[in-house]
Length: 155
Image 1 (tube, rainbow, N blue to C red):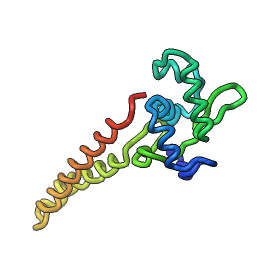
Image 2 (spheres, rainbow, N blue to C red):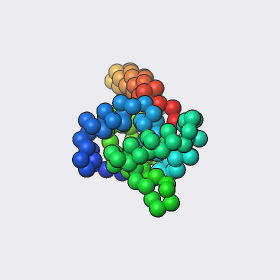
Image 3 (tube, rainbow, N blue to C red):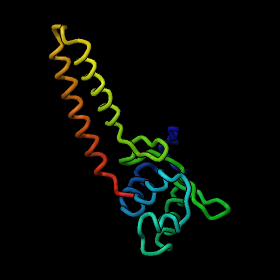
Image 4 (tube, helix red, strand yellow):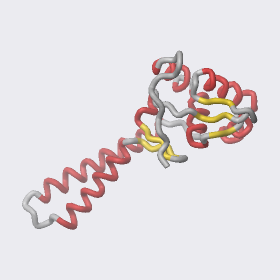
């Protein structure tokens, strides 16, 4: 199931404010990424998952995210994520529990093209050009996919 991203603006907060307040602070960004994957969680779960020294620290970051409109707190004290696209997250797609760089879809496309050209068009006179272009596209998109993965903090 693919999560649908909500608009770029938070009530009262611009995209630049979100980028500064969330992606500019490493631990707050880690908490938001964890919440994007988990969809719902408590401060204790966040503290255990990210190895924070105390539940208070997890609560601090969750309350900061709540103030920015990125999570809401239910009547049981659990926090529920509100997915938004800002900062580096514009280059990722959230599907279920996965945060996937957009470039990975190009890697799949170029990989399928390379296999298709290899098996179905070897006798065609432009085969080698099409095959080389698809291999170059595959390599570049795989390289960019891994670069984007390294930008995300571990959650």
